[in-house]
Structure formats: structure tokens, C-alpha cells
Amino acid sequence: MSISENINSINKTLSAGVKLVAVSKTKPNEAILEAYNAGVRIFGENKVQELTTKYETLPKDIEWHFIGHLQTNKVKYIAPFVELIHAVDSLKLLKTIDREADKNERIINCLLQFHIANEETKFGLSHDEAIALLDSDEYQKMQNIRICGVMGMATFTENTEQVRNEFRLLKNIFDKLKDRYFADNEYFKEISMGMSDDYLIAVEQGSTMVRIGSTIFGHREYC
Ligand SMILES: *Cc1c(COP(=O)(O)O)cnc(C)c1O
Image (cartoon, rainbow, N blue to C red; front, side, top):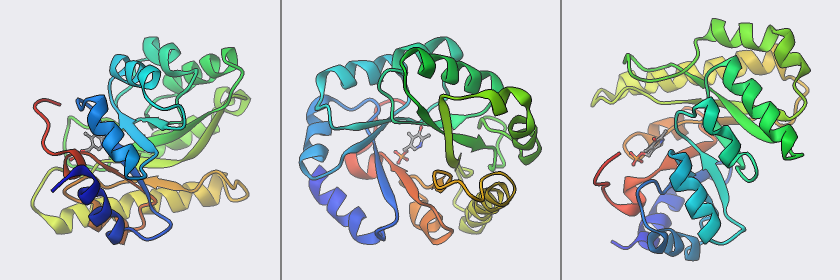
């Protein structure tokens, strides 16, 4: 199947409230343009250098999302244009994003990443760490970031019940934070969860944003 056929069949399974982030990491501009011509406008990347090169060479109405682990010393390269940073997992990173956004006279949208998987290797905050971050004076003073919701990755497993429980946990964390900190905040509404192998379960559990790579573009040579 072609890229546009893949996109059409994914779109048929997504309800109107769920945004598709086409994860184009490692893929060339030609492949991205094919998805673009099929109507996709949101693309996700996880390497700063690759993202900036693609931003410079591809149509300017693309919304670029940074979905990977972001090092503080690289925030400055994407701060001028990035639309959403999915994986904020520390106060230090959030402070850096706030400062770089200020330098660019803009507000940068962010999601808090939570550790929901049963795996050591996945980054993310615990519920308590997020509370500490949101209660901190430093966070309260930030003027140039906007927290728009939460993000998480489920364990890589065939066990769909486990995956379902992990996504349910993330939805639960979202609801609690919404109640406690963002009840009157119209921006705090996104739950970024679901990838090629598990997005249907994620959508069933309340995902508002799925990040899909290989089901659109085919398998990657490397990560
Ligand atoms: C690579 C990646 C994806 C997409 O993975 P696929 O299995 O190819 O759909 C989604 N989210 C993150 C954070 C990724 O790094």
C-alpha cells in the first residue's frame, strides 16, 4: 500500500477529535511530501538536527512536533518554530523551553510525559513528580510555555490488557491534573498516546493525539 492509502485507512479508524501525528523520523522529504499531499499537516520527529533540516526544506504550513527525549542544550534550535513538545519530563527542561521561547517572543506548547510503562528505559514523570513541578514557584512564574496535556508510551508487549491498563492510567492522571490545576484552562486538553501497534487501544482509552510512524511510512532501518 502507498503512503496515502495507509493514511486514508488510518483516518477511517480515527474519530474527529483525534489528531494524527505522522512520525516521519528517518524518512526522506519525498515520503513526507506524499503524506502532506494526502492532507497530513502534523509531523513528529525525535532528533533536533533532522527536525531543523526538514523544517527548513519543507512547506511552511507543516506543524512540527518534537516527540523524543529533548536535551536542554538543544532546545534553542527548535524554539523558533516547534509547535508542540511532547515529552517534557523535568522542571529543568521546562525552564529552558520557557527561556528560549521568551527569546523568540513566542509561547511554546508542551505536554508532560509520564512514565506509564513497565520498562526501565522509558522516560517520564511520576504523578508525584508532576505535582511537585506544577506546585513549584519556578513553574508558576513561567510566561512563555503552555502545558496542553500529557503524553505517554505503553510497554512494548503483546499483552493488550497490560497496554490498555497503562493507557487507562495516563487518562486517569490527565483527569486528576485537569481537576487540580487546569479546570478552567481551555488549552489543557491533549492526551498523546498510541503508536502503530497500539493506537486503537489508545483511542479506545481516550487518546486525543496518536503518533504513528511505521504504519504510514513502512518500517524504519534504524530508530
Ligand atoms: C518512533 C515513535 C513513534 C512512532 O512509532 P511507530 O511504531 O513507528 O508508529 C511514536 N512515538 C514516539 C515517541 C516515537 O519515538
